[in-house]
Length: 220
Ligand code: PRP
Image (tube, rainbow, N blue to C red; front, side):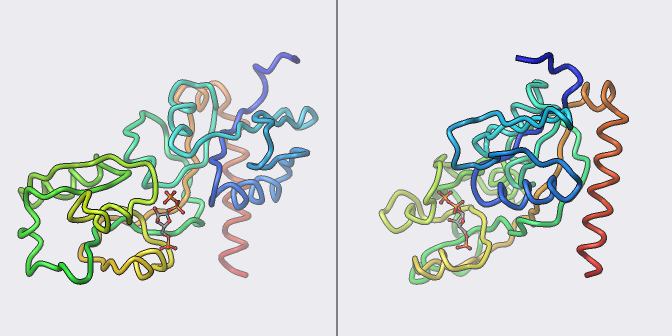
């Protein structure tokens, strides 16, 4: 192992955001041979550029960054808010656009949101959901799930779900209907608070380069 104090370590989430995030870093010159979320190799470095990428489970990215195991990370705003981690949010990367919402089975819609008070909500986002329902003075029972949330109401686990929607296909295919919008989300660049100070020049240069690429994409 080479000393890595002067490296920038970036945590990338496996899944939908991975390829887009890796492409974006490649556009500012940060490539790394073999960087893939399918690889079993979980740390991929570019020694010439003094950068290394960690391939992480999505929900763990804010944790790596909060503890300084990664200087930077790419993560959806939804997962970031849910994590309640103490990190800097540096940049909205624009991709991975989706929104968090509440949905119920089409055939079991109730007249008003308040009619769902004291029912069960299946969700990957219990904190976001609780914040939302508490605005309306609604107490709910939150059932934390890790995926395929749409199954909840179908198999009688819950009356509703709080989840992200991107294209709407999953809702449609499972006969669910959105009844309340909660928040928009896109991918964000986050930084560890200490790294941001200690490695300010490198991180700041990277942020400026990313801004340029994003602005050029927006104008294309
Ligand atoms: C997410 C989300 C929905 C789906 C929404 O799941 O939880 O299930 O995407 O996308 P759509 O509106 O385009 O259909 P993901 O694919 O991340 O997998 P998961 O269910 O295992 O969490």
